[in-house]
Image (tube, rainbow, N blue to C red):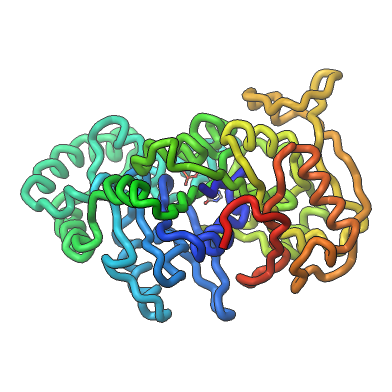
Length: 429
Ligand code: IMP
């Protein structure tokens, strides 16, 4: 299993891409097209929002689990884009759960209208993709599932009754114009036609593959600090981005999970609003953003940047039972005279190493830092630990000491092959 240990954008896509070359199946378990995985392959940049990045590997089956929410319009466009980039997508290498919920136009509308109405300082900074409203409908038992799109008569009836309620909310509470159910029906039943061959019982495939001893990679989106339960609530996404999501979101059982890889960037970023104790301003933030190209893959927004937060990282490792760390973008720290890791939060005269649930504590705590000497060398092309500059290796070792979790892999550049494996502890070739 691969999951993010920060606020998303840790570089999960490339770690998934790498592990996918050693597994038979890749299964995504939550989130929707709020995620964006950027993968650089043969000098080409591909951004995937729905389709698991395993699709780029031959002989790998990519699945979208029932915990994912799907915008069919985006998915259809993504399949077309992959095909025109030379990656064949067909039901033999890509399937979608019949139980996955569908992001409908009114979900996007509600998401955008609500964000617009929220007073400044109270905005969540959502991606505007309808994620909150679609999960809300799922739990309110008025959702539309992928399967529904393929059963026109029942779909129409359900849509009409759901939209009567959602339209009333849009008009009376949000003060906007309602949407026409007939037009929505026509459009979405069309997506149902196109996607029908891909719609399947994914949980059954997962279980069967497990029984057959196939190697399965479960891919998380966002990061565990955006998890609806363990994240910085309410500045979170609306699904379980962490460990729990894999079970409810795919039908996997615990015995199927042998390793949990926590992806952590060598520094920290966040898009959208919400507390971020190690956020920097000025030159450090600018340099991290520039060198790390920290702009959102989905919305293009500038990411907020700061030093590695060891307190938040330890919390994420603990709540997800992470067995190995994938440390990404170490190369971005090249050129800093000093690099820092936060090892505690100062609040009310004392220092804590526990990640607080309280927003006000998180917003006002003072990070305490350990400072280390930096390095200047370009790390791209380094393939083994002994070739790393000593200070860069010291940084990696310090992450292991502070967390008690082994670092399995370190990425040192944007290309697929720019990484080094420090140990063999996760997935052997
Ligand atoms: P939503 O998921 O669009 O509702 O947005 C909720 C919060 O999660 C916002 O702060 C978003 O910026 C953040 N978010 C959602 N998806 C991602 C992601 O894939 N990477 C980073 N942040 C994300």
